[in-house]
Amino acid sequence: MKFRRFLPVWLALAPVAASAQEEYPRFTGVLEHYLWSIPNQETDRIRHRSWWALGTLHLSPMWSVTAGYWTMNGAFFDPVTEMLDENFVKYSTGDSDFRFGRFRKAFGYGDWTEWYSGFVRNPIIRVRTSPQLTANGLTTGMDASFPIEGVGRLQAGVLDESPKPFQWGPRTMDHVVARLEIPLGPTIVGLNSLSKSAANRADRTQLYDVDFLLTEPGYQVKGEYLWGDVGNAKPRGHYLDLYVFPKFDRKVTLLARHEGFRGPSGDQAMLATTGAKYTLTRDLILEANYSWGSKTGPGANNRGWSFQVITFVRF
Image (cartoon, rainbow, N blue to C red; front, side, top):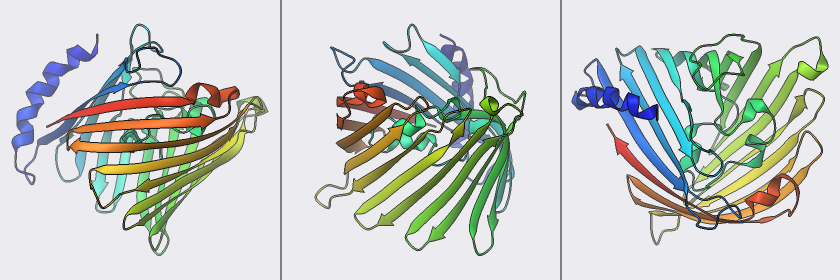
């Protein structure tokens, strides 16, 4: 397994992480292990497995290099699926950031931290809409993030949306992505677009997304609505998430999701999910979900129980 080749490099860099926070160079990183189940697809439940590693070498207050790796195995990743995760160079100047390489684009909630939310799977709109919005969300290219006074924060980039599993840099940057994040009191609203121009309509992409995150003491509400034109298809869908943080145990998060989707070929799905996340320790998370809804179409295989265990080793 190729992942093992990178482990000695991580172990060699780990002592650098012991440096004081203000010293350079310094290294920070995490090694995460996932065990999870897929509803109605397994007889012995938790037998899918993934390793995810990400490390950042901080060269100075302005320059850093991030490298990541991702490997999956199980019934749907036979024998093993491996790929580079985020691998990019970053330059920061105060409030502005610039990235070049392989990263997750700013389009709705597509960051890796979504895997810690308590939901075992991603929303259907992030799996079935188009190749540009797959579950891993990885792309290659360059982007910039900077504040707009009195409005919010803009993140925009030029991307190669068809990277190979071990492709670090862009080859054909033919997509443009933009996200405007606007704070409105306790709510953050995001306006997103992803586009590609082409003479042939079948090669064009025009995807749009509106998202929001409302945070209040004791609960959060988050949602997205996506629509657009991918080739000759017009997918659209939504999800609405509720997170409740009960006072009786701060380690517990109760959650619920409602989602709907209409796919490129006209297939439709409507699902509801409830569940719980238990943060046993800082380095151990337990999750359980139950979903019900459409018995046909893209939602059918997501009905029933699913479970996930996440462990962390931090540097």
